[in-house]
Image (cartoon, rainbow, N blue to C red; front, side, top):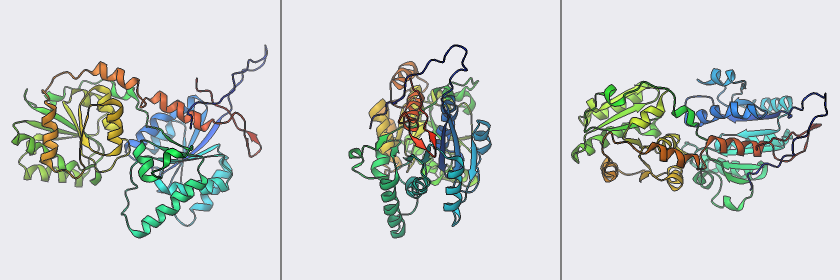
Amino acid sequence: MSSASHSEPATTSAPGAPAHRSPEIRVVRVLGAFDIGGAEQRTIELLPRLAASGVRTSFVTLSGVKGARGEEVERLGSRIHPIRLDRRFPVRFYRLLREIRPHAVHSDVATFSGFVLLLAALARVPIRIAHFRSDRDGHPDSLRRRLQRGVMVRLIHLCATDVLGVAPGALTSCYRPSWETDPRCRVLPNGLDLGRLHRRSTLRLRDEIGAAPDDLVCVVIGRPHRLKRRSMVPSIVAALRERGISCRAVFVGPHDDRDDDAVRQAAARHDVLDRMHLVGPRADVGEFLAQADLLLQPSALEGLPGTVLEARAVGTPVVASDLPGARFIDDQLAGVALVPVEADAERWADAVHRLGLVPGRPRGGQRALAAFRDSVFTMERSVEQHLAIYGRNTVARHGGADRPTVPTG
């Protein structure tokens, strides 16, 4: 499927006539909730750019709440409609679609998108998008769950006009291995906002954590969650010590008492508690990455790991779990050492050791930035592809109104 936009050339208004305004495109996007996470961050970063091109996005959250970042989303001009996923959901969602009359429904809820898009088809929404943002849905692999996934994938096949994945592995794992033969399918990576990585900061990371000149500084960035496996990091630091590498680990992300305690307890067991630094959420993530010697990313589940993208955009080496999304990034940008998900701390330490990193050495950030700007991961490319999908077809009837076009040039 081509990602090119099919839009009519701009028309010139007659002298004295009011300036022509592009018609508005209405999109309803469906997700769990606007909480703290990579997918939510990328969605928020897209909003003002899409709005500038005439796209008005409303959100439906299936948790029944707006989420921790809901107010931020609404300040950007979007409205959030919390509709809890209960027996009343089908009627409430259908009525909302008939009220808003969107040109597109964009569903980010894994295989459950099949049911969402069935309702969108019944409501005569012309563009119906299933978007896979991870390699799995995170639910146990029970017989009931497998049957449900099978039904939902079939509904996606029947009801979707577009099937997107943040990486090839997301489409292979969540939709079907033969997705490349389906013209509705395409890989649409999350676009990375480079401006977020270059915010002004007074950070002096090595001074802040008391690192010695020969200390290797590793950062671990992300929300606390069992699948992120942050409590594995102390054992890796201990294994590096056995190889003669003095290492400090800096955890950037929201605090969580249970997960933070798991990190500290593991560190105490391995006698590296003084090497752990849980600094909490920070706005200057880009500076942490740029000043670190390495990003450690031991997650057991990802779609397209945003922290790996951010690290490569500033030139910081990465050692990450060998997941399809990380492999995709390495194929495009290189600089990612992959370790099997089931590997123990010894193998992780071996992967770090093989890199031969020198603490505090500059990493060639300008070269990395230039390579990133030529890659498929830029925000500009992501915006262009979203607009091409939302604005596909120059004119289409939709509930008595002409479907607008979206210029992307």
